[in-house]
Length: 270
Length: 347
Ligand SMILES: Cc1cc2nc3c(=O)[nH]c(=O)nc-3n(C[C@H](O)[C@H](O)[C@H](O)COP(=O)(O)OP(=O)(O)OC[C@H]3O[C@@H](n4cnc5c(N)ncnc54)[C@H](O)[C@@H]3O)c2cc1C
Image 1 (tube, rainbow over the protein chains, first blue to last red):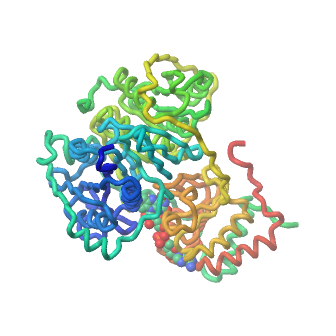
Image 2: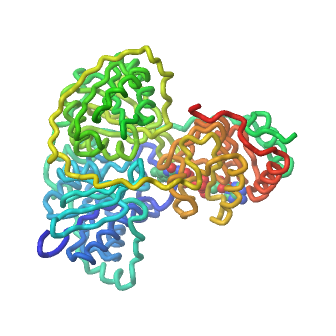
Image 3: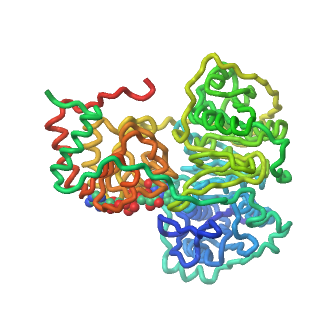
């Protein structure tokens, strides 16, 4: 770790604030413009963890996102929570990116920076793939620990000990820094921005980068750089309802109990 | 970084990473052998199970019985415990050597860490949480998954086409214990330094007070229509009477009424019980993909236009706060020790 303390990068995304997202019928991509948006809640946990670690060990927290310029609102929210600076990568050439092309863009910027810890949300609520963290860790060739519930750092030895969700319970995992973490619920409870935080966020630096700033071949970005694409969208098939019960609740309940009995899902007294 | 490898005839074979933990195969791997069988037959290619671990040879017979034509087995002390570093290294080397066209990975927590890491190493596309697969006229795998209120077909231009699916989405084949597969042992060099994350210990999960939903025969599921956490009492009472586990929609988890272990749907679990009672659930596609394969679906909703009624076997249009207390009373009074007369799954 440098004298300046921990260098923490948190990757964030702005997501629609409503549950049922809308899809462009022609391009088959999410309609993001003019939709109420918010900071992806899993990323919010990541920002909170970054700030807490900085408060404990010193250092700085940089938040980074790739997205339309509107996503600057999400960056400002992180700065108001207490992150130190923001980077937004925004360019038409990046549109239509799948997770591989998105992680590649983040990688092209982050590899130029110095970092001890990178934090990503476990998933984003709009697509829920959870790919970005592992993709990015691989491109940067650093270890990853996903679904982290608790973080302890050994600054002397430059090591992390984390509790992570596993299929069989909780695993306790140790890794050297730099490392990439993804957040699990329960890692922390994110703070709300204070008025002071909101005012000071206005003075913090937000860098805006384009694909040209990232460098490399344009063919690795956006739709062109994406191995996967949505080919077709269709209505989910429906099952035909067998019976509809409505009207007097007493009668309805009687009918449904009869069904349960007939189907032998329950057995009757006597 | 590897060059992207576009679709070409050199890539052949449908692979399934069949994960084991502590010497036990994960069900989802066998389920994906079932899905893979169909795809391999359509392509006229081999179905290959890839088994990594240490002293796991006795698991091979299960992979044969559940449909594999070939088993690639890598045994190494450093593969005894799952680590993303070691497993990514081995799978990447095997993939580069054999060039499969498709690679399925079960969406366990381990699988969800492994699959995207591997995809980035191989510089290929990945589609997670698929609910159906097919082969299109160009020979590409179509990955079907929910997308907003609709379903999407996703295509991957590069090879291998990596896909994950959650447990309980696909069906295992009927096991045929006479089937034999070709067994190929691969030696892959793994050094301790290759593994950067060290597992120091494990804390076993607590018992779940709401009942495990993955293998439940009866599920009582609630949605936002419940209005408040206090009303869970009603649901729990009904579930107890029916010997059911309690499940829910995402908004219920978001509000902290139930833990995420009970969530059904795209970002939760997939279930297929004998009876699924959906109470105060609208029936968004993101929810229904996780339960539409239930044998019988009973839905209670006060809105006659709720989409849940499109897939319900029995639709009850009415106020849950009127229906449930009556139903609970009726079950208590009229029904002997209300117990399921059906046999438990897996028996
Ligand atoms: C990427 C992504 C992933 C998602 N993953 C999931 C997932 O895994 N699981 C999931 O469930 N959702 C998921 N969602 C959210 C999903 O789109 C829906 O928003 C959610 O399923 C709706 O939950 P609900 O039915 O409980 O709530 P609502 O849609 O608000 O429905 C509540 C229902 O209760 C009924 N109701 C209200 N009061 C009463 C009453 N007194 N009596 C009877 N009925 C009443 C209403 O008529 C209404 O139909 C996901 C969304 C996205 C974008």
